[in-house]
Image (tube, chains in turn yellow, red):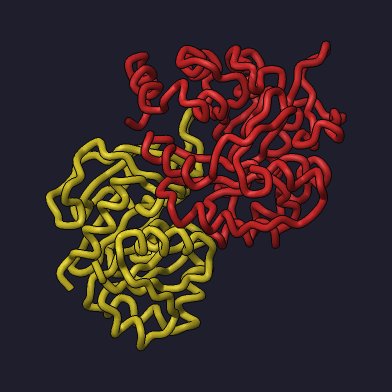
Length: 200
Length: 244
């Protein structure tokens, strides 16, 4: 496909699997924490593992808390990266990037629904959006998380743990998934390909 | 896994080569496996550090989650495996030798990627944990009651437990539903059944009667005798909620 993707190097493990998933789609992948490179990127992925406050601290230290919200090219947040695009997170009461007017909440635990939520869930209520082309209600995706953004009119799809939460969201050039598309088999690859094909 | 090749034994003895890792990994992805576990059985008994380049090779081709088990004795070992692209690390004997390791791993990487593997066998007075099961010469019973260990590893930060019932391993006569149901009652994190799967019926009964979150198998899939797609259709028809 020959698309360029720049991944914000958030310093955690699990960036390797994201890189490999993009490379399987023919993308050229660059990892960086450099503000200039992010501004110049064709498209940007904000991954994230670990705790919200730590991740925000690392972004602030690099000055990226101002750079990322101002990006105009397609941006995809994944997992914690989605929560960081929100206003804040209940995890350590962290202030986040404020791209999305929502606050990440802790998943409620319930019998049969342990937290962290780890495993495959179906998407529900899919909205027609280029990021979700070729995917349907009932598509399965792989989740690993303890916090999530609430269901909102910006949601493109929901999933259900003990309660429903926002699984996919978009606003302007920013979009995000709570699940890991890089670990979600063929449907995950389809979503990443859709992201690579979003008009830059 | 042993020296970069996939092997499978019967009751932890007589391991034989069943195929190249990457070929098998790709086959299981096509067949809709939900997750793969790679046990490096050479690692723990030999007490040596292992060449883990194969983890990167696997991560490059797999688009489903996978865990690596075997020889992970430290935070540094775990970090290498995770940086190479594994989603989870599974710890067995080293957790028995050094239980604090579980907490150190959970604090560093989060509970979600810390799986504790338990090899367990029925005794007259319940179930006992075994260690160093990769090597028949060194396999020993730890002085631990299985259900006590199930509770302890959760308190220490385990995010998932794979309970491998050794009496059943590789003999394909069905999961040890009684033991798994007892473990379920003591386990609030995801519990994965292992050991004894030989037919689709065995999977249906371990989900229905032991309430496990997942079922792991090797022989029955490696041999091609029970294709995962067919198994999943069977389970869906029996009312088990599976990804198809």
